[in-house]
Length: 327
Image (cartoon, rainbow, N blue to C red; front, side, top):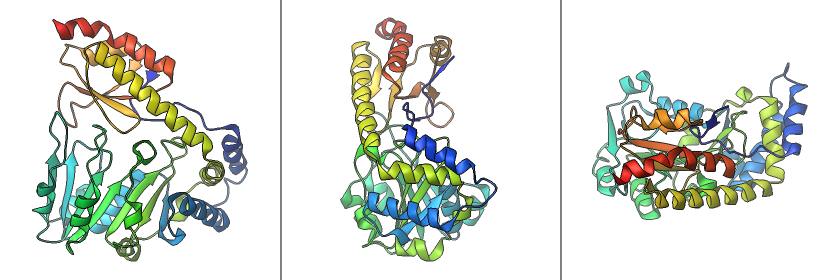
């Protein structure tokens, strides 16, 4: 069986009480979600994020929220995003938008140059940024850049914080102050709920006034699992620290093998190798990783952090390339 290190999932299963809550929800799958559960989940997320519950929009996965936000706010606006990223912009949004600008992140540090964004804010603009960036793992934003963007009346800013629990950096505290800010989050990663697809939006007043909630799309198993997970999130914090420790260990081992690896703040690492048939040989060794040649640049690969034994299997698979790298 192949070891899957290409999707940035949590390697840890949720605890039994969360699994039992999802099973309980299966008894009611002939019914739509009850308002009681929706409100309870919103309140728990509000407490977790230290924000008012009315600012939270729930969704079956953050990808759906992202697509709907882009479609809702692209008309007669520029869209600014970055490359690489995994943001999906529909053909409809591209037709409605005035212009699409993709700012390139360049090796070796993949830093975002503030002037490349700020110089484009001469008209209505939707800016979409992930922080940390996927797939580089780079922290792109600081409070100074965020506030410079938000203080421009032309700007509408969406920040994807899917890896917030790993980066430990958030701009949620600015939402009350800036109506043109929204933050995208997910319970897929740190909360080990990827199979249930549970995303949410923390929305400033401008987003709240112009974006509709769609709570009936959430399944009862997802709702009950999310509620149970948030009641006792200690397991999440413990697993996050384990993943961060493994990320640092794998990075150190890759350095020892003379494999080019870039430090990041997600639950994954970015590596580079120009060895022939690199990905194919890793797969033949029983490990799946993500090639970035189609989305970005050749020779770059993203590797999710798995369980220690899975990471060891990856390190074993990549070790033959140490010699070819030095040759």
